[in-house]
Image (cartoon, rainbow, N blue to C red; front, side, top):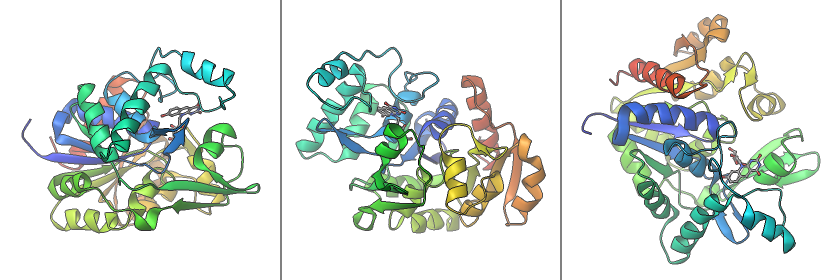
Amino acid sequence: MAGPSVVALAGGVGGAKLAEGLQARLGDRLAVIVNTADDSERHGLLVMPDHDTVMYTLAGIEQAGLGWGVEGDTHGVMTQLGAYGEPMWFSLGDRDLALHIVRTAAVRSGRRPTEACLAAQRALGIAARILPMSDARVATEVQTDDGWLEFQEYFVHRRQAPEVRGLRLDGIAAAAPTPEVVAALAAAEAIIIGPSNPLVSIGPILAVPGMRALLAAARARGARTAGVSPIVGGRALKGPADRMLASLGHESSALGVARLYADLVDVFVLDEVDAALAPAVEALGLRALVTDTVMTDDATRERLAATVLAAVRVA
Ligand code: FO1
């Protein structure tokens, strides 16, 4: 497809749903920059949850409801790993493991994680490109009353129960946007920050040294930008974003998220439930777009995508 190209920034499930709606309208004109700070090595294999959630969603094979993993997957390997005394709390399906096997082999043979991810996307017939924010290792660590935890220990093993007292990104100083990310942002007519966790999904992307400068250069060149609130009525639709915003001193509301994106976007999209916050969002110098942002199926994913694309003047 010819025509304007769009770059979306996404983390887990919420951003993946909007990305699917955007892909339905844009096809190969869409690139999705994904967070890699949730990545970890499990059983000796590289697992990239936010990339993989977006990839399976764009391929239409994600586990409905959960958003991660492959629909209908089996867990024979996981069960046998348990028999060998391996930890079982991070559950990897058999089909999911196939991805981790081929990607880990590619990286061990010298390919960049981005190259391995793009090869898997092509194999699944995905039109859009899903671009890891960096090929360097970056790992979110979460400070709790029990000390610093690696991200999946907090998110999965402890089921996000601990209060988050602080966050840090191990390895971020040595990270850089990949050449594919640089090229996508240089060509973007519009940039959309998806409804993902602003602190641990969008935050790491923005924290990659040079990333904010690339976004600023795109805007200076005329790219239109929008951000979509992941908080509706003060609550996250999925995950710990609301509690994390509060425990880290931000307002757990669409306005609290708008403040985090105020220097990055022209338009801020918030749900009808939060219409009363629109004037305060506009007082930040943003255009507030009030719409139904809750995506329950393919039709609502595409409708929100169409609404956001209209707001950034991309047909
Ligand atoms: N989340 C869970 O709550 N429990 C799991 O067992 C689990 C396994 C898993 C395996 C592969 C993968 O890509 C994601 C997985 N997730 C699981 C979700 C993952 O922790 C989150 O999607 C991200 O890290 C946060 O966006």
